[in-house]
Length: 247
Image (cartoon, rainbow, N blue to C red; front, side):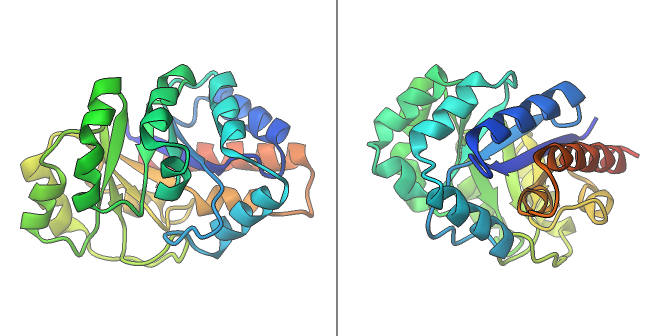
């Protein structure tokens, strides 16, 4: 069964809504893992949709401690924080890693931490039994893939579907990069960027799952519908995507 990882911007439209949405998704059984987005003022890997949600959450006063609180209260067991390095570094990186287990969080997904810097922190993750999810891009050559995956630091690998930002809906031939990853790692491989109800089936070919962010956050940003309608639409979208990737 292929997996569905859902990304949600923490605390938008508000903290109680995020709690309710996560509970609804957990009860539905349609998602397998959750990325809780840590709101950040300059989310360089994200497109306009997630950037807008980040800025709105920050305007509402959402802080790092709120994200920890959301994770701790969740009934889901596979939760990761997706955020930019400064969010963790400013807290004191080792302290941030220590806090993960206390708050029901398996690990971090940090898109702006390059491999060369990443290795400096490997022991902190290892010592605390937390995961540090690695990114692979279709532009990475075989030698680069081997270097990135030299250390098994997470239960899955995040394969970026194209060079660019989230939500742009572009497509690239991923067959060669998938072969390269499979030849050096037996970790699950999930594709992210541009995955939605229409693209999920194609994106899921030859991988173990998909990561969906902008498609869900776009619903969060729709002020023309109620909170209950937002939750219902996201749960239904997750149901459709989970079905598409497993048909």
